Length: 107
Image (tube, rainbow, N blue to C red; front, top):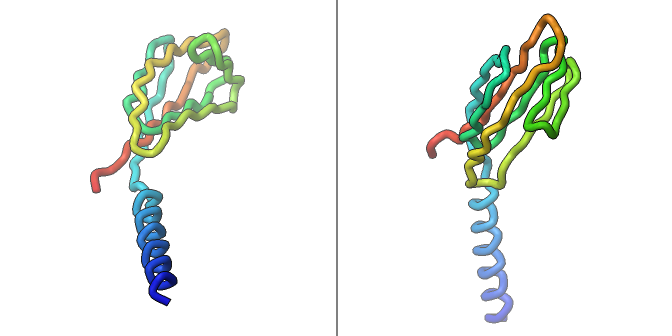
């Protein structure tokens, strides 16, 4: 009987610790409009690129976004992304890339 109670207590402690580790992180989003070729520093826990113009957008020569497309990158909980992204626009009259960065709020 004592062993069962100890097991229940241990499992309860493990469950509570896991709940703490997986608790939701409060965040805030900041948006930036990019309308010319440039570099963009992440410095956040998640970043997304939304092509709102009519020109194609290439990110780091690896991701090409057609008008209306988007791509997102995130990190593991507790890590900060410090990537510098190179943004290049293709032909088009309306160059508009919306960059959304997600930052953690202090507890």
